[in-house]
Length: 347
Image 1 (tube, rainbow, N blue to C red):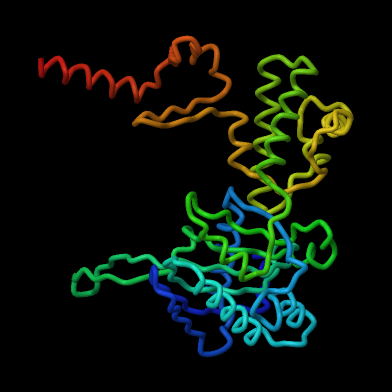
Image 2: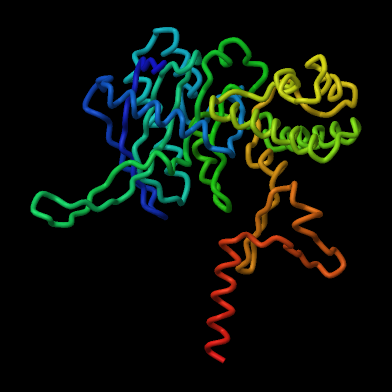
């Protein structure tokens, strides 16, 4: 395990909906780094990496209202050894409490603040971990209920890439955070707490990348199999970058695309055609996934199929607005045959 935990702290935070009162409880003291704690942090790191919809930004230049020091100043004090981790974590949690009091939201969970190294990167992650109830059977075979933190469902989390923060502040994307849930401004108070503003748009950059790849395979007149292979290479490369928490690099991607002769053809194609895309950028995996698969749902109908089937096994009539599946999957066919049989019996 290539993980080093420098410091970690926990706070319990709870707020009922439409109630301005926020309960905040600090840990009793420094938390010991044990093998279980290392496993927990590694799991949180991987879960965070796997979140497809993340945004990126940096600290605001103007100070945060109502506080003597904004979050980035507190962070600097800690990183420069002018403040210990526990006081830094306590002050940060108080800022989160103050921001949450401004919103009519219900949030309960454990706030984890952790400074760690993983796979050559240095990070500070701040996450509010939700609490889930579960059931268990005791030694007397009685069913009881208890609570546990559910890292897989974390929605309020931000991570600072400390290397990028130190060496490339002007890029304004050293802070990543999970995008808010649809229809809720849940992440707003979290960004205010960090005094952070969104910068580069991963979704927009990913959409440009997908369009550039489609243009590239068309201009080079690749056949259907070559086009699909290129799309799969794009998908595979981006998935690997997501899993390791790295940005998409156009030069690296150029090396991965099989049509390449010198390893720079796609990169040069993007530059020559003035695509509004950076050489390196964080991506949105949900956008990239669509390059090889079409899917949609609504009115009780859900459809998903590989792009390679379109025009052969799956055809669309734009005039009638109808979709025809010429090769029905065996398991779906069995279900449909049983449905037909049951309807004939009822008749």
